[in-house]
Amino acid sequence: MLASDQIRTPADRRSVDNKSPGPRADLVSAHDVRMVYTTRNAEKVTALDDVSFGIAEGEFIALLGPSGCGKTTLLKILTGTLKRTAGHVTMRGQPLEGPRPDIGRVFQAPVLLAWRTVLDNILLPIELGEGKRQRRDYESRARDYLKMVGLEGFESKYPHELSGGMQQRVAIGRSLIRDPAMLLMDEPFGALDAMTRDLMNVELLRIWQASRKTIVLVTHSIAEAVFLADRVFVMTPRPGRLSEIIPIDLPRPRHLDMINSPEFGHYVRRIGRHFAAQSSNAGASA
Amino acid sequence: MSEAPRTPFETVQSVLLLAGLLAAWELAVVWLDISPILLPTPSAVAVALFNGVKSGLLIRHFGVTLFETMAGFVLGSVAGLVCGGLIAQSRPIERLLYPYVIAFQTVPKVAIAPLIVIWFGYGVASKVVIAATIAFFPVLANTIVGLRAVPADQLELMAAFMATRGQTLWKVRVPQALPFILVGLDVGAVLAVIGAVVGEFVSAKEGLGFQILQSGFSLDTAGVFAALVLLAVMGIAIHLAMGLLRKRVLYWVDDVSPINFSG
Image (cartoon, rainbow over all chains, first blue to last red; front, side):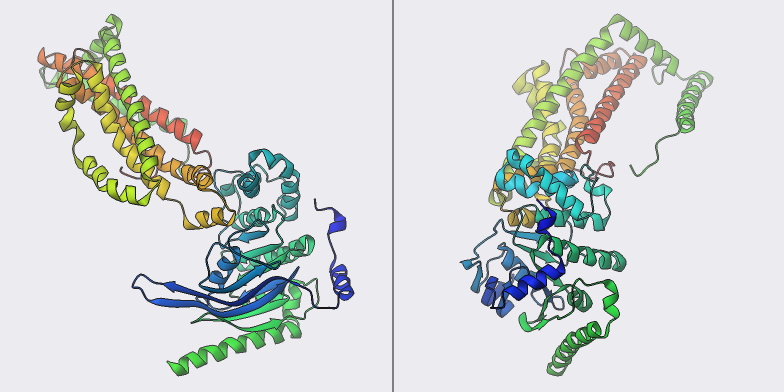
């Protein structure tokens, strides 16, 4: 499936963008999304309020914010596993009313099924959606994705035989198997150590470049958001709002040593100030 | 495995310990001149065991008890699996029935053995029913708990992949429940032996429990011990078989040491 002619280099990416200078149609758009939870004592908690945005095809979006700002809630609404209280979400112009096969999901934990081999885990969405018989048609694609996430030769291993980083790679392979248009990732490398995490981020950019998926990634690391994303959606808590959308105009492909560049530092400081202002406001109002 | 496998040296040590204990027992009985009715020597037990096996008498009783145990275990655990599976399908039903499951669990089922003998007669059937009743509850409780023990993120995963209820049951809930169910089966199998023997104590014409009573009545203490040795062999064999089953079924569990769950 992943023939080399499908893999666009960053230069291709830019040239294609140049050919279509007009505004691209959004893959996903959200208008005034609101989520209100009712707690056990019948209190209403507004997790999301007034959230509106558009995401273009092939874009890498980072959802950035402190814990409790509704990042995961927003991601679950985009996945279709959580019903929003109000507002509209559309994908390719159609309302998003539940899980769909063209959206892949990666969780904080790998969530692999321990009794299935790596290959069987990657093929799980196929088994669920199309039945066991269709599996064979996807096996070569599964092997391609395994190769892409750097796990060639691990097909018949069980999850407990893999490290945490390798397990999360399997989870990424699993989210890609149905060839979704969009990948939703909830702090996928949050549980990994800092060094592995940096490597996985570089890998993720490579996978993104190779697969041309739209990615929405939740994180609470400013540096991670700046390093990965085309645009950073900055969220603030209580209630969860989208307070700013910051385009990251750093060249691609991005390398880890870019973290030390002045431009990178500029973005990190700018977003950092945003949160500093938030917390001092909170302090003043308290 | 969290523990290193036994070395040959350790095995030799264990065997030597047993031999030493048996020798001490033998010598103590001889030197202290203890009546064989109170405590027979190990050698007398060995002779009783050998004669009983040679005459076929103990083999026959062993076979009867083994059959009662296995039949009861299979009946009780299949019933426990089916009932547990059904109860776990719906929260309201579980809430309705679970208190009664717990209540029955706390009733010493050994105490209802005489009742079951009245209902099912003095033959093999009543022992099978007693063994089944005792084996039923740990399997039932572990099945329910196991089917409920699915991490929330696995359910969200299945939801995101648009799995049906049946797919979630067979591809996630059941495999996730297997470690629990196997603990329930292990406990149930060992309890089934107790059930069969207790049934034979209440009233029987054959079986190792019957043989123990008979030997006891005729003050043949060595005969009692011989039957006890065979019961121990049966219990150990069943436990080992369950261990093999566990390794077979739970090939994907890193640490095969059983979860400590008292059903």
